[in-house]
Image 1 (cartoon, rainbow, N blue to C red):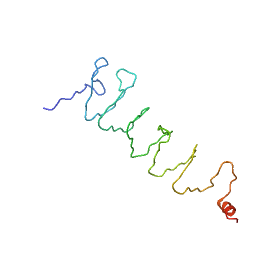
Image 2: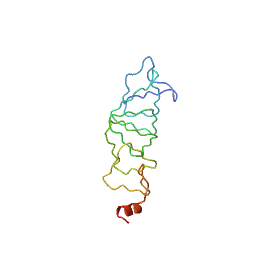
Image 3: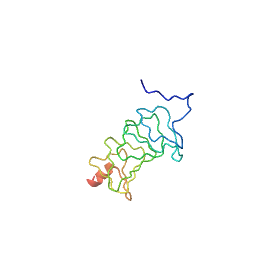
Image 4: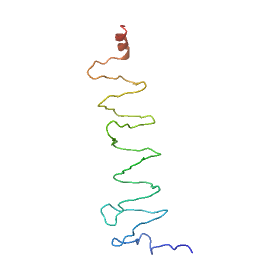
Length: 141
């Protein structure tokens, strides 16, 4: 005979355990429905530990801390990005990096290939000249 289900008399009522007598652990293959709570209430859902993966349609949280990799198959949106690494560490991008705003650097910018610009490249404290004028000056034209 299969294990019997715990079924409430009506939908959305009843609970497992109480604030005074909570269950120690819930072990399940699948959880269906809503999980809610706060970090400050006694009957809270203060932490979640799973040996597998968590799948959610939409996940809202204040902070996410990871000690390993975070990967995404879609776009990662951020209103602010900051490296938490130590000075001298490198952030690597394996694809193209398109920036629609400004780039500000307080140290050197280097490249192993050409640096190309559709407009002029300005050097602080010097007069601005175009490529043709610079070549004329260099080659006495």
